Length: 497
Image: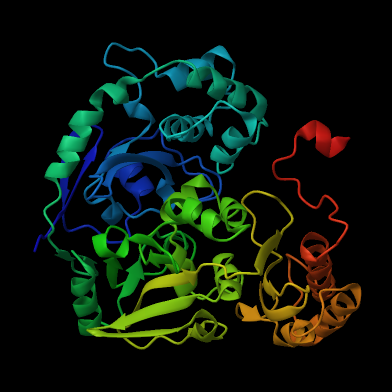
């Protein structure tokens, strides 16, 4: 067992102990290391002014570990989550001889900085994007990469031009150091549990799932933190104190992503970004839904199972997985149990999880023969917005076009993510026709009694939920007209034609 965390800031190794487990990376950088290039803007993971770059070794046998570079929001990341990583800030980009990083030089050349407050965060996101496998100098992918960085001066056009120039600039100083960085991070891997006790709080980083289970049996009231994209706001906005933080984001056996002939099992520490391609390959529309969860920085930290475990009624993942028929895996000590995902959500803020029990993973089955799947998110903005509602639909059709089974789930329509059972019943056993559609539209009004809030009114949610059924019909019914219902993948000229 280790009583300190170890990580690199730039090229300097830090061994830290005796700190608060909820000390944020942003506060540590600015207040204790004097790294004021990293800015505090919203302090809730939305604006990106605090973006930093974290390098880690990911994976293992059979392919071996690989060096992964991720942009994250320092304001809602805890220092305790840096164990085993190398952290870079904007101060690390310039070469010792004063040469600017290609991204910095491009921002200068193309006037990408205006007031300058947001610039360090943009630069770090741009550096991270350059390091992603398959990154291309095209507007769409660049816009996605920078969606988590906001500029009040509206300087987006020159910033995107700067990103394209930087993409053509070749290697940077970190490329030459990649082998050395991988070696130093490998040396930090000791497989030990970390336990740091202070006068007011305690931090545990379990070495594996068995250590996690033992920790939670001993202290069922401990707060589990995976990506801190939710818990971080408890601290920065809610000003909560957490007596015992258990950080699971790097537990190896919870980071597994296993694709089988039967479906996909996602471990509790798998981030949305790491699961995105696998989900997109499993369920139509799942990749697009994940694309719109938060931002790159949020998806790089937030986990699929964390979004489930916290039980938010507007989480975008659970309705998709419920409609697909997902199974949740829970563990308490050595006892494991499985349940249909929809049964986990009992009421607002209440989940079927016993003291000391934790979510170990979720399994999403592959689509069956004749099954069609669609998911639609409705929000005021495309990027970085909470859903007004999200509908997910799985229909099974026989060769005659009759609906033999239906699973429909919504988020934002009730106190929990919930199935639309009356609507399902109105569909089963009927041909997927205009008459069946109208019966389903009428039934959905009886399934939910949504609230009115700042995101949408009761009337709006009811109306849009019914309209999503019409969209589903237009896209999937045998012999339907198949009108164009999607903007994704279409050029700007085609959209405005």
